[in-house]
Image 1 (cartoon, rainbow, N blue to C red):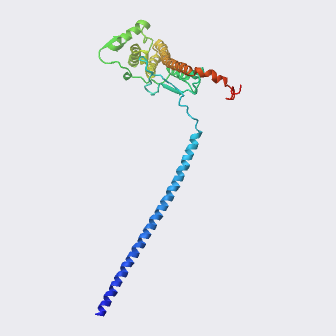
Image 2: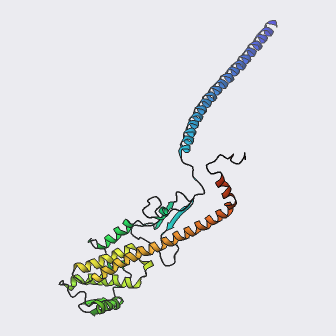
Image 3: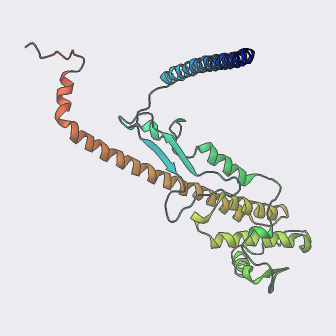
Length: 308
């Protein structure tokens, strides 16, 4: 009997010891886990601290760079000229090159608008097309280059009913133009020794160019159109057609084209000037009571007058 009790107590003690060992082991595992977590947090904190330091250095560099940039006066005006403007009769375009027809420049100072601010030889404040740009295009009119003109370049019907005038047949749409040319300048093709099969298309394209000149107003003209007209006229000259009058007139159109642009530029500049004059008058009205007092302090300490 005593032996069974002893065995039972021994067994209970053994079980109790195992339970204690499990508790201790669990606690140790927990401590190890917490230690690992703390270690990971410490590493994460160190990483964030390092990253924060890098960000601070970057911010300091940006601030230093910003301080080197001149401050912008938010009250400075911007003078801009849109060469296409909102004029109902002038739309400046360049179909091939996609040239933007607006010129925008910031005025350096508006304390007083200097004449140099409006001159085209001032590269920083140029408000108009530079003369060399115009000159370059006018030179293109005289260039002897490969022709790049075809029937598809004209909004004219070349098919359908034809009428024979002289040695050539023309579509009805071109007949009035051909007759006006002949009545004024005679048969411009008469001096050409070439076969009509060769010169026929050239004559048609030349007359189409003249008709387009008749149909369009200046605000509808583009640089691309003028170069197409040049090609048609040059082709006619190459086969010995007497069409020098057309080339002279094309140059006049080109001059008028840029003159129309200049007209819009001047109009826009005048509007800017009027706006500035109004602003000046308004500013003068607001400060007129203080201007004389300010002059009393010119070149003087602000204590002037404090001690009579």
